Image 1 (spheres, rainbow, N blue to C red):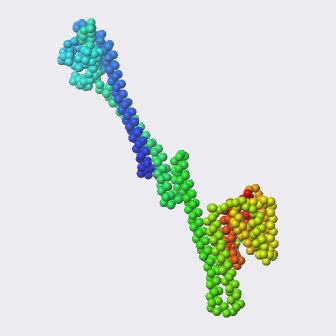
Image 2 (cartoon, rainbow, N blue to C red):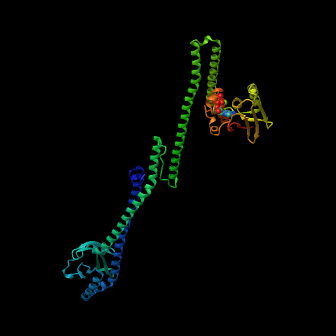
Image 3 (cartoon, rainbow, N blue to C red):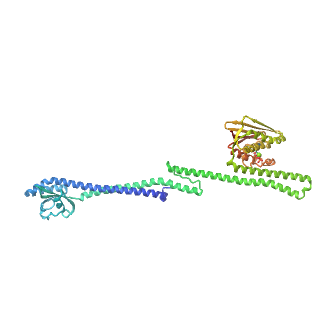
Amino acid sequence: MSRMSALRSKFFWKIYLTFSALILVSALLISWFVANKVETIAFKNLDHSSSNQIAFLEVVAEDALNNKESIGLLSQKLTVAARKNENRINIIDKNGVVLVDTERNPETLENHATRPEIVAAANQEYGKEFRFSSTMNEKLMYTAKAIRSNNEIIGFIRIAVPLTKANAEIQLIQTTLFSIAGAGIVFALLIGGFLTSRVTVPVSEMVQVAEALRRGEYNAKVKTITRDEIGRLGDTLNRLGSELTNKMADLHRLENVRRDFVANVSHEIKTPLTSIKGYIETLLSGADADPEVRHRFLEKIDRNANRLSALVQDILSLAKIEAAEASFKIHNIDLLPIITGVLARYDDVAAAKNIRMNFKSYGHRLNILGDNEAVTQVIDNLLSNAIKYTPDGGRIGISVKPAAEWLNVEITDTGIGIPEEHQERIFERFYRVDKARSRDLGGTGLGLSIVKHLVNAMQGDIRVTSKTGVGSTFFVKLRSS
Ligand SMILES: Nc1ncnc2c1ncn2[C@@H]1O[C@H](COP(=O)(O)OP(=O)(O)OP(=O)(O)O)[C@@H](O)[C@H]1O
Ligand SMILES: [Mg+2]
């Protein structure tokens, strides 16, 4: 997901707008506060300098008020001083008559007794007033102080400072301040946008991936993986996707196995059924007249019926194992009677093929954790295969060896062997190395798949080694107890 599409994310705007509002409000508050402070300080300074000058002029003014002759000279000197300081100085007598003015001829001025700063100065230490002066043609700050002699007001001293210059300075400071604040805000908003998108882009990306997973697009991946909790979440989401992909592949494979199984079963059932039907039809169309032919055909029908029966038996037992696998009952059982029992059952078959069977045990206690019936079926299947795929006069050996937590059972024969490329697959359902041959021997290819299921259900293991024309050995590992 690109940075641009962050702009379409609600999450982005939620965080970004909150952040921006905070920045704006705090920046404006601080600027406003500082601007106010600057103004206050500037006026205070102005005030201070006026008071200082008044304190200095007080003495001079007192002299002038007491000795009117000196006024002319004083007026000249004050005018020079006022020009320098860029202000205006007045000395006013107690009745409001202006005696000295550094800007005009005092005689042209009206009486100042009612000026607010003069009225105020009569009652407080200083009288102050901001006012537009038509004399000076600008806004001024007037500060006045009463001059006393023996506690009697004898006149006033007044200083007027133009505010234009101070105001211009204040304005300059404030403009600078607001410009810096504005630049700061823009910078903060840009950086804020970038930082916010760093958080929201991966989140939006994860939302998209999660939605894709829900739609079944399991290969959707989060690309922005940061090194924090959000990154871990993205990584987990990616793993989830991979796991889902694997699980789906497993399901797919299982579905194929099931479909193959149904096809195989149908085929396996169809073959003997077709034969049976053929023989019966031939018999019905008159072939039963010849007793020899009839007997031969009935024998064939019998063999095919047996095959069908064996097949159904195997399928049922496979279904049963699969159903019961989870609830398999594992007991402590003795392997010895099981093996000898199976061997005894195959005595006659082996003798008929002139095959010698040999059992060897390397331990006194052959106890395992397993299910009696299951172990019997495992040994039975392996022994039946060994006899089936070993030519007349061959040898079969069974041995049991305890090894730590395991009991190793080996079934060896000197039979036809299994070519390397088939060894992996003989444990699959219906898999036979030589279909025709196995079928002639009455096999369906389910025996070893049943064995493998059973061994796995008992948490054991089975594998095979074999060489064509030499023989095969099946190794079964069972948990000893
Ligand atoms: N001891 C063995 N020697 C040689 N080949 C074997 C041996 N055991 C199994 N096989 C091969 O493995 C295949 C699968 O064995 P499996 O027991 O599953 O099926 P089957 O014996 O053909 O039929 P079923 O056991 O269902 O009657 C056999 O068809 C055979 O080709
Ligand atoms: Mg078999």
